[in-house]
Amino acid sequence: AGMICVGLDVGSTTIKAVAVQGDAAGTVLWSDYQRHHTKQAETALAFLQRLEQECGLTPGRDRVYLTGSGGGPLAPHLGGKFVQEVVAVAAAVEQLHPEVHFVSEIGGEDMKTLFFTPAGDGKGKQVFMQSACSGGTGTFVEKTARKLHIATEQLAAMPYEGLTLHKVSSKCGIFAESDANSLVKAGVPVDEIIASLFEAVVHQNLATLTKGNVPMPGVLLLGGPNLFFTGLQ
Image 1 (cartoon, one colour):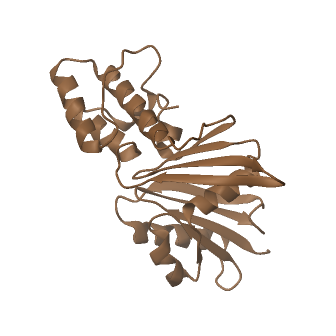
Image 2 (cartoon, rainbow, N blue to C red):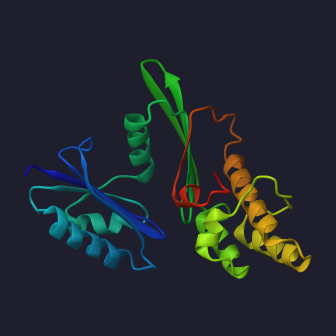
Image 3 (cartoon, helix red, strand yellow):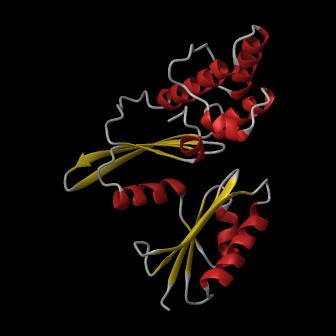
C-alpha cells in the first residue's frame, strides 16, 4: 500500500474528512461528514482513529492536510499541514471544475465568494469573505427554523419557488430574527418566512459582491446550507 493523503476540515459546526490513495488527485478511499456539537478536537480525534482502523492511516508515511476554523490549532499536534480554506477551495475548483467562474460557499458561521477571471495563460482569482457576522449563514437559518419549531429534515425540503416573500434583514442575524418574529406575530405562514430567509441569505451573499464584479456561469454552490437546503439552491 502506498501513501495515503487525508484532508481534514474542522469547521465551525461540522467536521469533514476525505482520504485518497496517493496524491490529491487519487482514488477516494474514505470520507465522512459530521456535526461536532462544539467538540472540534474530540471529533477530529475520532475521525483519525477511524482512518487508522479503516484505511490503515500510518504516521511517518501518510500526509494530513487541515483546513477550517479549527484546523490551525490542531495541525502542529498532528504533524499535519494547515491550508487556508479559500486556498484549498480555489485549488479544488481549478482541478475538479475548470469550467467554473464563480463560487459561492456558505458555511456554519461565514460566507465566501470566489471569482475566477481569465488572465493571460491561467485564471485570476478574487476572493471576498463575509465572516464578521453570521447574517447569511447556515446557523442563522437553523436558529430561526428552531424558533419556528421546524425539524431539520423538514427545513431541508422547504421550497422557495412560488411563495410570497417578505422583508427580512440579511445585514445581521439579530435584525433578521426580529423581522422573523414580527412575521410570526402577523400570522405569516411558516413556509413563506423560511423562503424569505433563503432570499435574505442570497441577497446578503450578493451584497458582498458589490465591488464591480458580476457572477458569471458556471456557478458552483458549496457548503452545507447550499447542499442541504433545497429552497436555497
